[in-house]
Length: 258
Image (cartoon, rainbow, N blue to C red; front, top):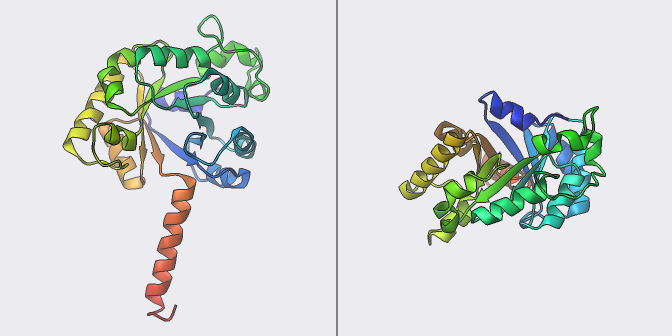
């Protein structure tokens, strides 16, 4: 099956990405119907494991979203396994060097481009008539996370690795790495300067920059900066934000009775 994220990028449009921290097929099904272009299962900081990832993918399959995963680490076993499970994009944390980016791409791609083992137990269901393996290398997105001072130092070398489709900024860890308070929607001039560098270097190579945001306002601002994939919070954060607002509004409107 063609990767819709690739199509949107090729058309010049930005991708609005959902994020699943909750290990629930029902939660995934709800999110998949909300208008997102892609939905990412978070196996690093979310409460997700491989089985819950598969359940989320099954729940989303009836809807036109691209299934992606953030893996826990740059480890070939889990990378191959999430791809076999149906992921069309893999976001990998803490890629700091060219060598680490090359290892990530190798784990994502079948020979001769990489070393991924053949066994697409669910992914084969998404394959074209010619077979999943014939299109997987082109349709699978390798997206390293740029989230440390070291990664910024090695940015150009990482972006030059063949097979890298884009990068994904982790603002909290990036701030942490520089000794600043970790947060998502950063307005510090020093950070915005780093973002500008990332976007320009990606643009030179025809690849795309993504970023995690705390909500719609900053996501729209990020698109205006040049980011071409924006994640809106996550499912648990959205639920908590709406619930807190609803409770507060109820108490306010009930004039202290509630």
